[in-house]
Image (spheres, one colour):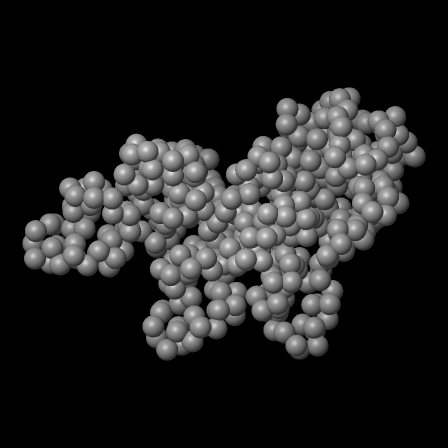
Length: 401
């Protein structure tokens, strides 16, 4: 059992009866009360990093166990089992991969065994150290919610973050995480022009005010494809239950095997990183609102980094305009660099048939070219050719694994 999540100051602030009892000398501290009574009483306001409602929503097995009386609360499960199982108290807020990528010192400490996870570091040290860049965006939050900005200006909150942790999460407000300014401007040239003309201070300002509601994504997550593939999610967004498809995917969809997360690039060089149970990675751009591929990867070098249980890497596409090979035109100077390929679970999507391609192992990595000798993909660290062909859900394409 771990009590790392417990925050003395927060516990006293949210449990004034306990604060009074501590002040009167009945308990040495809030932690003393929690260990003696609060845990058994089902008190769950122990940290701004834990939200009982979100934890139970994200973990229906835990919710069922609590309803059946096996646990008095989700917090009890989290402390006894959840943290060791890699479950986080704030699903949709904390992203392990983003945190470790943003803070390589933490990643090294986790690799060395000093912490069991990035979240373990965050709850023990990172929160107090103010490491929020990978998890929350203050500029976005204040731009999107002027009522909060006014409250901060009036001194009711020290920052938007304070409001977000204490109120915003429970009000289903978006923290605006994982926004990439350069990606957004490349993927939305109309916004880039508007920023250049001075209509918006940044792409983020446009996204907070208009872009999110328009179904645009501030990351490589493909909002249009996800909503199209999941009409129930689209209905929930229209009903106000989620701010976007990406919001749903981060909180629920990535943990649901029947959902696929779509990650799409721009017409420039991109690094696409996926997450979730099943993901589909495409390094080239699609037209917003239609899903039609705009660029075919000519002149691009895209990095496709899978981190899902099942990743599909696209070297060929199929849409309403037909099928096409990608990264064909500049010989060896345009291709997709595929990282983290797992032969047991991952696939590469191609058009046509296997005899239209050649495979060669070069310097310990597999290269895939068309029969004209034009390099299309490099599978890092995979030193064997692929021969197993599987059915694809896209007409005119197949999956190679």
